[in-house]
Length: 95
Image (cartoon, rainbow, N blue to C red):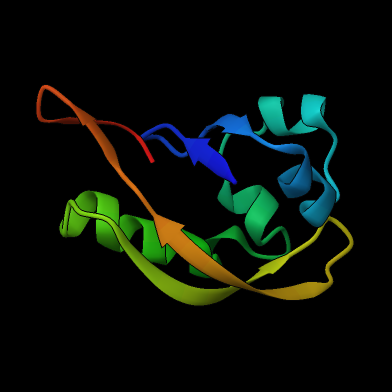
């Protein structure tokens, strides 16, 4: 589980997430964009990011999808993605 800001910087994550992706906590906190962690070989192809954008920016509601991520070593891992955008005063605060 993790949350990102509207600019896709990691805000929070749990140990299961850091273990799954193979990144240390201090590394995750310094990454400028979640796509660099979720699909490091080519961040623009991040499948999870496309699902998140669909629900937090376009539909502005919770939703889900199936995607693949890559761990730090490039191993492809299938994942179920459940997106919950959080809005404060009508503005996206985090997802």
